[in-house]
Figure (tube, helix red, strand yellow):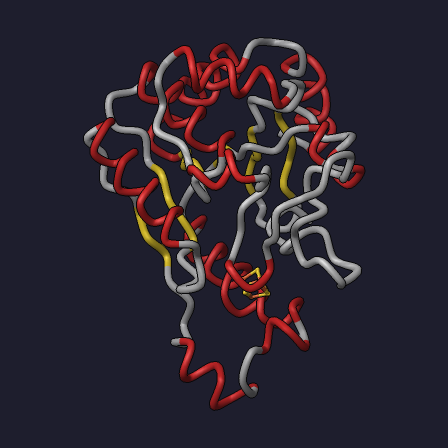
Length: 227
Ligand code: SF4
């Protein structure tokens, strides 16, 4: 398949329902597709949907050691609800080793490097051996995601990226989560539409962009996973 082929498939798939897109992904890639979860609202909705299609969807999370305790609790609740065990991918450096090598609180001085060490490099490990990954990207989330398609060729990681929720609104995701009583991160009820690491996430104010609470004070809106 060429990149052009994937572009055509992406255009055909964009507009189909998330369940149809996910079903296509599991039919196409079988056990060689993995679902990326940071246990945000989109991710828990996707895990619920995937569990309706395959008995044990492969799910991984990037554990930076800096996540909110609510996020770890959500992960355990989702594992328990769906009887799954998620792959927990850790950075090569512990927080202490990172501080010794790069100085204390690297995220406050160079968040790009910190994300590279604690997310981007571990993501490469998480995706090794897979043909496709599923993400919770939605066009509405930010201008950088406004042109995302349901299926894309991921040039950076050399595999297919599947974004089943790409056209959904925040309300549609909430509707799925509520209707199916999916466990979700309680921080969403406290003004956190997008939840990452503790030092780099704040609640947003009314009218702010959905990702305005990420890396507040820096000209940075993506951790590098979706660039
Ligand atoms: S989100 Fe912040 S703390 Fe987490 S890896 Fe990126 S810079 Fe580091």
